[in-house]
Amino acid sequence: MSEWASSMLPAALGLDAEDIGALNDDRLGRALDELFQCDRQALLTHFVLEMIQEFHVKQDEFHNDSTSLTFQGNYKAADGHKEGGTPTHRITNGHNKDCRPD
Image 1 (cartoon, rainbow, N blue to C red):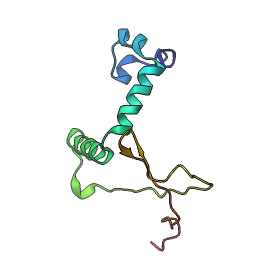
Image 2 (cartoon, rainbow, N blue to C red; image 1 turned 180 degrees about the vertical axis):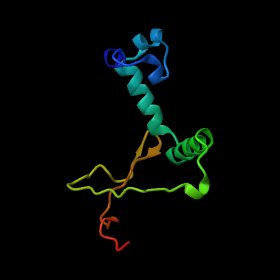
Image 3 (cartoon, rainbow, N blue to C red; image 1 turned 90 degrees about the vertical axis):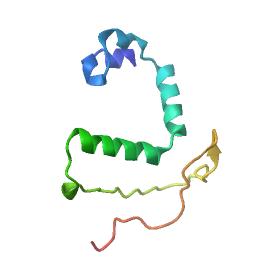
């Protein structure tokens, strides 16, 4: 991680030059574990509200473009079981929005 980050301007990553050396795979792994445990809907809502305020996005010009996801293959472990107390995603048979008339 520190090798990758050293090729960038520290400020672009929200860091000071001396912070680059503190980046490593273990720290990234712990951060991703924390992110997995968080309330992702609340995180996204907070993020969107911050961006609206930061960049003065007018609500009459705001558009949410949701993405359609398609999974192919066998995902036996994607059954909604709990991982560290947090439910995982459950992949089921269904229909995505790719062929909708609008």
